[in-house]
Amino acid sequence: MNGGVRGLKRLASTISRNFGGQKNFERRKQLHEVEEKRRFFLFKVRWQIGLLAMLGFMIAFGIRSNFGVAKKRMTSNFTDANGLVHVKEFSWTSAELGMMESSFFYGYAVSQIPAGMLAAKFAPNKLLGYGVLLAGVLNVLTAVALSYHPLSDVLVMICQVVQGMALGVCYPAMHGVWRHWAPPLDRSRLATTTFTGAYFGVMIGLPATAQLVSHDHWSTPFYVFGVLGVVWALVWLSLSASTPSEHFYISEDEKNFIVDRVGQVTLSNMTLSTIPWGQILKSLPVWAIIVCNFCRSWTFFMLMNNMVTYMKDVLSYDIGKAGVIAMCPQVLMIITVLSSGQISDYLRASGRMSTEKVRKLFNTLGFGGEALFLLVLSFSNESAIVIPSLIACAGFGGISISGFNVNHFDIAPRYAAILMGFSNGIGALAGAGSLITSPLTLNNPAGWKYCFLLACVVDIFGIIFFLLFAEGEVQDWAKEQEPEISTQEIVRRISTIVRQMSTRLSLRSKNQEPRKEESTFGMSMDTGLAALRNRTTVLPSPTNSAGPAPVAGRGLRALQGIDNRGFAATIGALGVNLPSTTFNSKLITLI
Image (cartoon, rainbow, N blue to C red; front, side, top):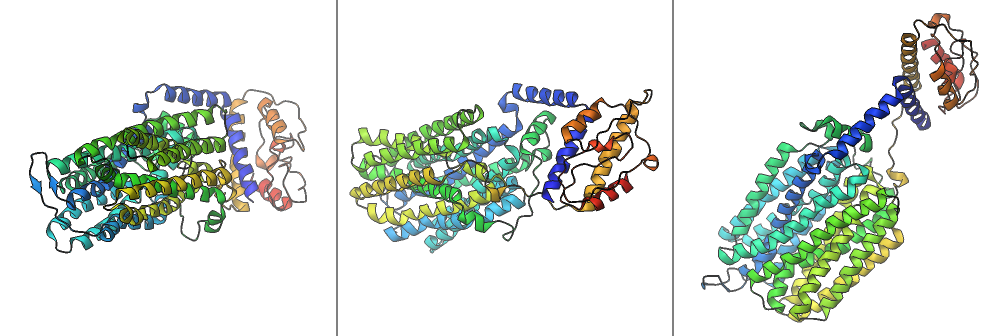
């Protein structure tokens, strides 16, 4: 039946183009494309959405960096820029500190799969906006809880868990947005531009938090970034839309350009029971993405949460200076993320490399370079070596984003948000590495050697697994399913097409004599349509038609002889798996 439906769609498209003016159709399409390409990218709504989303990710990751920097001021004596000595306000043990840091990732992990389903079922742009809004409010509440409540550590863990759940929707929701908005050959550029916001967030969040902590109070960054999150969410919810068709100021050219390439995607009725979990869990290409997500997250979270602490304990930098230097690796990471997205799309669009080879190339370069410099960090405490190595480590990590992190769209665009949620959920478990890092490094600078060595081994494992099992083509279980359609509906649609053809031909040939009858019995689709384009015959009314004897057997090859000049005999090769006797007789009756 599915073959018949696909054949019917191809037939309808071919007929409408041939009888509605194929040349005009193609000319209009080309004009739309030319106009779309000429426009500066900032005037394209999809890029405006991408840049605004990038700002949202920047704020979200700024929020996530607050506690990692502020904890050093909160748990140790501190001399501010004015020379005033501040006594530590909290006496947490390494276990308590590790639990508070990792509690964010527990919430982050459990929200991923539900977030992917919600992004597939509801408007993903709203999901992203509400997630950042809630995270901003909770950031303010975290500072309040720490400042005024005697059970602050418990309340902080609760706020961190819920905040993790709120920010956990960001990546799945954004994948849901790009499912509707990103043309295939723009996906890497749009996705990497958006996700660059995460690195901007760390780049700005670390030094900004450090400066606010140094010059004011440890609670200040929680309030500042919390308010920014609320403001951004309100702007995003006002200006974004879940699909191009729903956007209030997008141009017709851009809307048609996106829809032509992406298709008219509708929100899914996806539920837990309709997702092919069995095939997903058995798919090695899916596990290749998951493994790399975990490996990348291990190193990223380790450095994001502990870089300032590492510089203070190992290199003896003050918090303000460490925060500024911690910005440098993120600058290079932003550059490599953006440039690798551009280069990977170019390699695919030019046909120089297949999608699979492009993904494996960038993943190997990214993880391999990162592992190399982690190894260097393991055996050096000299700032002249450590700082460039940290910067290079982050830069290579950014290259891998054009490998595994956009591979969801390649192998399962239909389930991209689900897969992102699934892989990001498991990747978030890498945040529990704080339970290992904190005991190893608390008051023990030598423990960093083992942290870096472990991260190096994790990266190498990610390289090998992705090279062995990653793919670049849509998996069979992820292909769009054609809806079931009844015999009566197929008959009705073909009847409508033939009537429309009859009307158009009648209008075109009012003052022309009919040509000599041609026999087109048994013609192929291409031959039949060629005959139709050259014919000026006026179809008789259905009452004067001389229908043929129905052809027995399965697999309709031609709708034969609907009029005695052989007109409708040219519609062929539908391949509908129906008893043709029943089908033909119904069709002839309706027409």
